[in-house]
Amino acid sequence: MLDEIFDVVIDEVAKLVPDVVWGAIFLVTGALVTMTGVTMVLGMTTLNGSVRLGGLLTAVGVLLIAGPLVTWYR
Image (cartoon, rainbow, N blue to C red; front, side):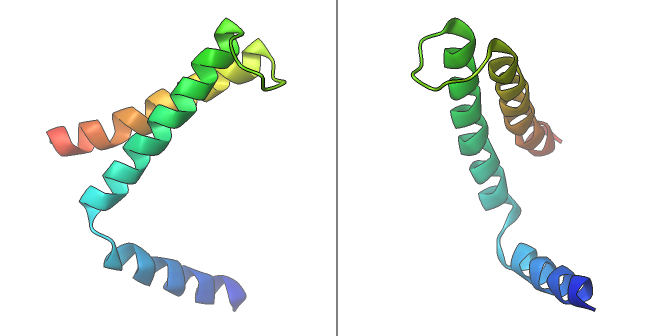
């Protein structure tokens, strides 16, 4: 019951926001995550994280950037 209510609410919110806005949000978020990951890999950040976490953040950020670009290209 509760999951159906959340599903309807999230679906309606997703319909209100245009796809271009979602793509822009993903691009900005991906750029920030990639930047954080690269600085962690290079050891230039004050965040206490490992190189593996930096690599994971870099990979996730690149995927967040690539998704909207591939969608907009089509």
